[in-house]
Image (cartoon, rainbow, N blue to C red; front, side, top):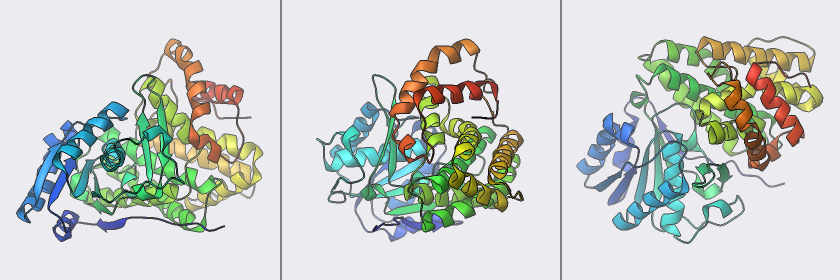
Length: 391
């Protein structure tokens, strides 16, 4: 089977933003949100472009877990300004907004929910895309994926297309230095979940495996340091690279069950994405390893990268899941719905919708072990109490 490993050009390190000086163009629209705009990051990008003769417009209406209506607003701003470069400055939701709006800017009649990996999108007739992350987790600056939310139901849907890979990703550690402790932890766990899911996906490959292995090493070493000391620029830069590698990995192999669960936790309970997928990851490791020998072996391979020596693959996988829970506790992330502060009443009230949305999530098809709605319900119930999966 013919396959492709598609990644953007990546500029990283101190003063990486100066690579914007090498772009060829005349008009750029910066897509961001109000918080990032208020922190001064957008001004830095805008100044570099304007000093090099660009006309620049700023749209800062992005929101967490972007709705289709917000994406359309961004696309309208693009159409009105007519840029030849789109510059996304922000976290994963900002970058998803920019990618999805880019589709509508180039093709206003496109239905975002119908976009699929095999569809020719015919982008780059009007503009190209630069992504500049301000968190170290989503890896969206390296991916062909977008996650958007329906306005009416709140359901998240994920899709991908090779043409959505940005033309340039700029990783400048200055933009994430001082990021709050919780957000640092959650986004770092998102990177870990991306990479681990990619390693057991039915579409895994040698190139994605290589990115995953380095990501796992880096997250376990550098995430605690990044959380403990927000001013540690070395740790921050390492986590930016780790997130980018994880993005390359899952973009070219796909995510699995932890993301199906995490997407729906965000849709139904509005839990932060990195918190959700990080919380789900150990449970999905235990579930997949229990009855899928290949997945157990693959998890045990990742476990060895962080010091787990165990000949029995399922036992090794379970120890790996336990080590991830230890990492979550070290960085202050919840390991269960209950630890996240959710009441049993609220959990029970949303459980049917959680199961329904999870069965509809496309990432579930990449999981190495089959799962049905009854089993999904049991997984969520175990996740509420924090019980390791034993089925």
